[in-house]
Amino acid sequence: MEKTDVLIIGGSAAGIVAATTAKSFHPEKKVTLVRKEKNVLVPCGMPYIFGTLESSDQDQIPDSILLNADIGLKISEVDSIDAQNMICKVSENGNIGFEKLVLATGSTPVRPKWLKGAELENVSTIPKDKVYLDHFKAGLNEVEDVVIVGGGFIGIEMADELNKSGKKVTLVEMMPHVLSLAFDEELAIELEEVLRGRGIRLETGIGVREINGEENKATGVTLENGDRLPADAVILSVGYRPNSALAEKAGLAVNKMGFIQVNEYMRTEHPDIFAVGDCAAKSSFITRTPKPTMLASTSCAEARIAAMNLYKLSTVRLFGGTISIFCTAIGDLAFGAAGVTENLASERGFDILTATFQGTDQHPGTLPGTQKQIVKLIAAKESGIILGGEVIGGKSTGELTNLIGFIIQSKMSVDALLTAQIGTHPLLTGPPIAYPLIKAAELVARQQRSL
Image 1 (cartoon, rainbow, N blue to C red):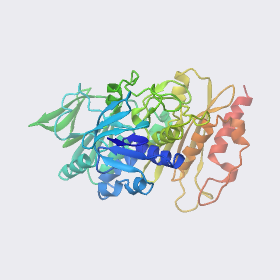
Image 2 (image 1 turned 90 degrees about the vertical axis):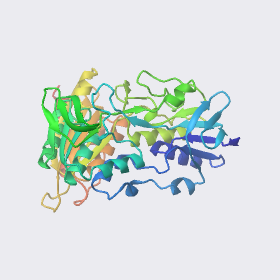
Image 3 (image 1 turned 60 degrees about the vertical axis):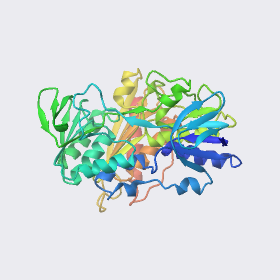
Image 4 (image 1 turned 60 degrees about the horizontal axis):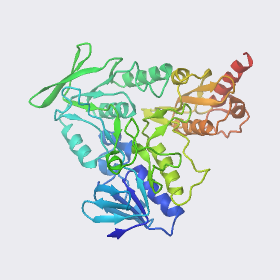
């Protein structure tokens, strides 16, 4: 039987970071990663395979990241885990004994069983599977009309990429607006205007009754109001479910949403088994309620925490809950969000103040390529602690959203933000006299003073 010190199951973002961090913090230990996929894709880059990138070959994570770090790599599937005897049964390589185990088994896209027509052959999901996506992309060559069900991040990115490649795209979202879970209404409407302006048809506030088909192929989608949309292909982007069956079979606890139960160290009930990424349970950093959020960035943070705590727990290396930091770009305009929306904060019982400021992402605004920059902040009324933020702007939106994430994780108040020092440059940031993040905080502070 082969033996290793640290065994990682799963080779996407969380698995890779768990392996490389484990080797970095425990260099004397043998680290082995087992995955079933021959090739690993950049998860967040998958929509761009269908437009911006020429093929999935340009969206791969190279194995050299692992091999150059002296991490063992095995392409095989783990059939079972014997948690008591610390052994994994692997399909093609026998058994592997371990001291510490990290489950990074990821997630699988949902294909609703209740939706009639979901199993038709030209109805697809977006899994982290290079072979599947290559086959799917090849099948789109003769396709004209595409209906995408689900207006989350992957849904809108797929819509934009397929639209750029010349397809007629309709996006159906049952919520009142696309990205309703990440953005408040006024920012979601801005995003919808951008999508429509690029030629994408939106059907929001309505669900799908069934997918119509003939001879095992989808020909259209019928909405709940009876309207029928023509479709040569249908993409289901209605969420992902955690791959927790392996853990559950091994006797590890799984929560009501199907995620592997872990504590703040990312450790399961078993002291030597950890779980990270899409398969691991999460709660909100702000509201402390369970959340089904699946983000590569969150997964990597969890993986680092688990790997650092493998052999000795650290009270300063904890995962305090997901801040849900999202960002995307449609054309030249980017959208980002961190923390809770105004609606969610109110629903969860917070007494809040909000403020929005619109400026520019460069200064002066006459510089070529300057974009408007809108920043919305959500803060607790009594303490002024920032609970959430939303951004619209140019390419700097991603890092500004990350900054808001740091602010939330540090539990900074509006006053702390107003006294913070910032660096600016005409080509890189908004102006120092009207920095949108600071000005939004100033508007919140003004409301606080008037209470």
